Length: 473
Image (cartoon, rainbow, N blue to C red; front, side, top):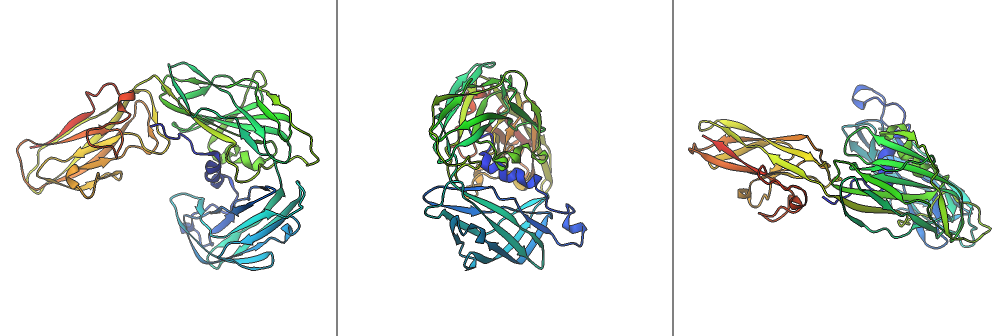
């Protein structure tokens, strides 16, 4: 249950971008005779380090639920990088100098539009020897297919950039009483080779945390669905020089709500001006509703001055550096009482009976697990029966040992207080056995050893409702 409540911002950006990019018509392919449109997401500006290479691949999105274009040809024209970088193309491409043609197969089926489409093509770029920080070049991607309309785009590459490295933050901030305020000191150093003309920080607070202090230079985003983190995007004017070490003038302050349990905060810092680094979450399609903060201005204090350089300001952070974000967990002293209900019926031989089984969180805490699943139900059918159908999330706990019964997985993102999940198991009566009894019990981790319920002792102190009987005849 101490799993991530929200993914890394870099991963979230790719998901949210699918909701925000303009990719032409939005009609379902099943209801229109026009070809699907597959559009390149606008590439992020790529900053190259003085030494080493960086891979650049791209995300494509389709405006149809079904795409099957086996004859896609992409053309990558990187001649605009001739004075900036050395370019190598992926193995599926045929290169003639800095122009390459790359066969692709864009294929995908989805229940929603737009959908992401995977691609094999990529480029590997490295700064040319002697290229000065701030030198800029571009490349262009176009494409064609008989089965889809391919819309390409332009990407930009710059030499050098800021590189904000966060000061260490403890990954586990401990256990606190409800109502407590958790203070998280946040600081960073520009280890890059270009200064930044301002900086930004994006902070996430998992659903059981709220921002205890609001600031006038921060925007606050709230999601329309329960179980999703609240966010704050704060902007800080003023240069961050090369080698400069700064910190928030006041620590990030987060308060436990009454429904808190296993919580997390996450942060990501970067240079101001890199609009694509933040636009994925501020765009209307992200699902967040934003309000401007009020009150005092949150500032940065300089802990160690940087040095002046002749390099121009950079707006893109150096690629392949993942030390500019943090994740820290904190636990509230709270409980979440999970319980289940049984089932009873009478049936004759050959008859089928559908058992309706429930998993309820009686609270008071929510239990959001960030994609690794909350509690589920472990079910042992009554003797003399065969399971002929189940809910979609139910399956044999161990296919090699069917006698161990079935496991019905709860929501992948956990379960809020006051909510109930329902599962069904359809049983065929092969033999009528008077008083045939099976069982259903709450299981807090699917792959724990039998008899062990890790995590439950931490928050579910009432085990009286953790199991029930399934009775037939």
